Length: 364
Image 1 (cartoon, rainbow, N blue to C red):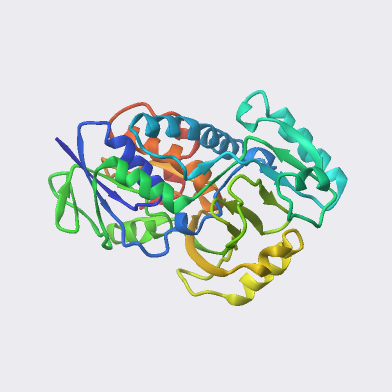
Image 2 (cartoon, rainbow, N blue to C red):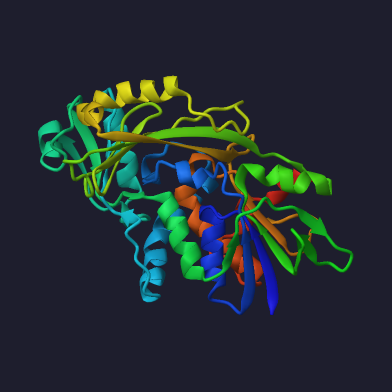
């Protein structure tokens, strides 16, 4: 039986593990459990308003969003709960009406290829308040009914548990052996999946590789309310860096920051979170009434051109990697994780990896 190591138990690694559980392979997962981007992700699945010009990136994001219903079906067939995902819709806000109109037209032009968008409608504040009565601070917004929110940490835990594979909470080191196999922390494997995000250089540089991946710090704050049910309220996407993401059980998340040149710093920067709270309170004043709060910090991976990559490491047969997902990790990560499971078992991946060439970012 083929033995496979997965280094990284975030959204990519956990999805790869889940789909590998459907093949005749033995898998061990390694994750130190520190700074994982998925744990501090805002969790919005709504790529259709993006104005990024990179066609391959948008294609990946579009198919990544489209992949969620398939993932949910697969989990439900296995008897696994999927309450980490809720198609609650998203409300896009812009300060100028012409910007709203432009994005409305852009999303409408994508409806044919992406029916998951659902219905698109321009709604007044009064109309939105019928669903989310505590909102204020805008005149109109675009509501995309098919947008969703995902609780990232719950999703990864669900996938790993459903896989049935062992998760070892330890820092991993990769060694290449003379017989073509690989050693990870004393165990020998035939193949290795590197799903360790911003920590990919730490794994590959000792093997003589240069890796175009850098860390980006993300902070967000969760607000909890004892008398508020927000489970099916739409996600709010204002201009700027913040998003307001309602979850079930009276939880509302605000974030997340995009902080470069901070390395792997995981300390709370109160000034950033207070600034976010002030900006978000303009739309949701009840934030200041929260009974308690919780901060989450994670480290995203990004490349110099802000595009992700996937494939086999050059001159490391049987070692595959994904990285550079940036802030779209929860949108693109599950699909990329499944694609890794396909590559490592010699199946044709759902999307062509040639559009996301690994050799552009990793070389000796």
